[in-house]
Amino acid sequence: MPPIGTRTARIAFIGAGAANFGGGEGPWDHATRLEKLGNIEVVGIADPDEQRARRVLAQRRGGGAPAMYAQTEVFADFRQMLQRTRPDAVFLAVPPAAHAGTAPPRDMELACAAAGVHLFIEKPLSADDPEALRPVADAMTRAAAGGLIVCVGYMFRYSRAIEAMRRIIEDTPGGVRAVVLRYNCAYSRITKKEWWDTRFSGGPIVEQATHFCDLARYLAGEVDPGSVRAVCIDPSSARAQLADIPRVGGRPLDDGVPPGRQVPRVTAAVWRFADGGVGSLTHGTLLHEAKYESEVEVWGDGLRMVLQDPYGACRLLVRRPHSEVTEVVGEYADDDPYLSEDAAFMQAVRSGDGSLIRSPYADAYLTHQLTWAIRRAAERSLP
Image (tube, rainbow, N blue to C red; front, side, top):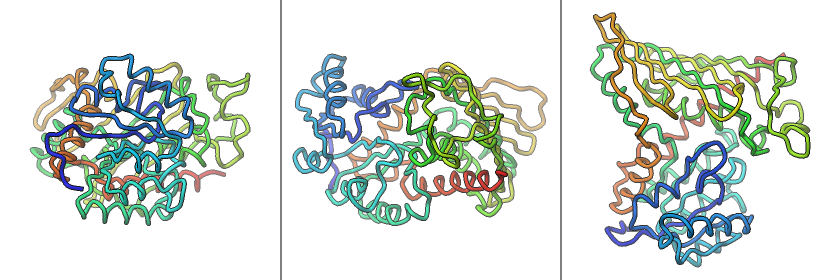
């Protein structure tokens, strides 16, 4: 598909859930950002739950940009949507196990590519392991090489704080020696039943900590896959009992999930980067209410950087070489990397310039490989 230039972009959504339209654990949705960008027309929303799609459409028509949805049609079948509305670009955000297949109904990426539709894909790439995903990854890489714009939703790559960290790393002799990642999610509001079953979500490292695994690669380079080691709390042990799992009908959402498919409560991993540095990740599913706690720490020769609360009141602390002073070099609570990411994608669609995409599919596939290496290493550690 050729660039669309300055004309109104025709976009469509596959999935009427929280990632595309908001809700759930936070206001991290694409529709709200696209409304801010303007010069966009939403031509379709596809979701097997047509009633949900109609509800979100009605909400948006009653919101701040009703004209953007004036001609929007709702479909149960995304193929019918592609054929009828012929969008320029699609935002694909469905449960991890529902897409990234080679046969219907999961072949959403391949169908969009075959139709010449530019594609934004929410992370993770799939609930499948990297070996099963390889045919889709190869096809999407070929499509991108042929001019299709394909972006994967690793929004932290567009964060001003991460940009600042990369500049500091470039100015520090010897580069990164260690990356320390800490991510503790607030599970009380995770009301998607699929999230609590690794068959459908891929597990919390694949589905959630993938953002931090991607940041490790973005800041410090590629990981030696053979170096990954990990342990986790046995989900069937007494240490795995949680007091505040959301309930439906009086039963916790993970009730009935078979052994071996339950979500680990804590995972701790270490690895070596290809250039010799080291990395570590500790991920927890332990906090109550809504606010997550997370940090990204980077060490170099004389350097320590700490990125605090990247999802919220984000700020960057730095101790520089030949100094004992830790300074706050930036506060980024007003930054919206989701908006920057969507703006870059739409600019790439308009211009045909794929270099604007900081997380193309082939690169995101490497992050998927790392998350699965951690998951497998942790599972091997169980008694």
